[in-house]
Length: 397
Image 1 (cartoon, rainbow, N blue to C red):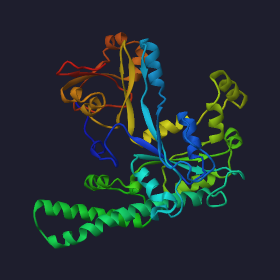
Image 2: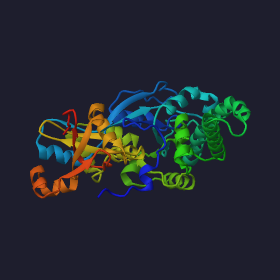
Image 3: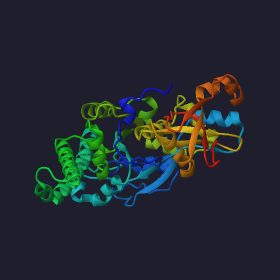
Image 4: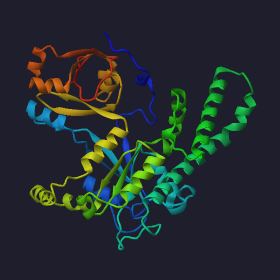
């Protein structure tokens, strides 16, 4: 018997519906954004001590760590292992007044508009050699500045839409055609969202209906994007796990955006270990209390904030992690691989990762009767190992 559908299954999500989503690195100048980007991607993006050194956004893909993929690779003894990837975009620093064009703000804000989620880097270290664009280090003030600029930009975009359409909406009056009523309903949603943002709220924190979310997603609003906060601390503070700015940052998040994640990292520490070979890195980490990089946690948290998850295909040729949105149907998951598979999908053979690991092999799992057959309209779950059976003979394992 198919599981009962819950209301949550049909709740629409803010943002684009795709599987290949991008997350942008945002913050004030000189907070460590490009240092973070350089270390996490091993890229050569400029990170000089200059507020607008990174004028054009830089993009790189980073592998998403997953111990399940590692286990599958070891147990299937295949030669090819393909992880999932997260696209990370380095966006030059915003300043106060960016929504009005200050500091090349219009260009930078448009770059934020093009991403699906945000890594918000906030400075939590003091260094007299690295000037702070606002003077003293104050994470709460910096967070206020960035969020205010994003809200101001959203308000301006929504007001532009309202000004361009209000007269036509008023002319429609009461009643009208189905199309006219739809336009009036959509316009009312935009006004409601504009009022919400003007009151100092992010769009992503509103309780919206599916119809409202459909309208919101058309406008690609900046404050509708999920945010993961990254506090850049000194190497010393990172290793001793103590920093005077972290409680201030955490309080601001709890007061303004409760539920959002805060992850401390050290740009200096990550840069240093990124430059080491594996033996040097292992020795250095062991000498510092078995310290670990913050990047795996940052990548997986950012991935999760975009409502993405993994499913796997595994066989003698390759084990691979595929990306899809949480809660999608098998047909939508199959589309991550190929449209032809999705369009002709008949059924899906599913192995649960924990079941496969406990059985130790695919043959043992099948012998135990734990191979699950699902229809194309069933919902895929995180960690499923699948074999798509299509009507065109293009099953993917």
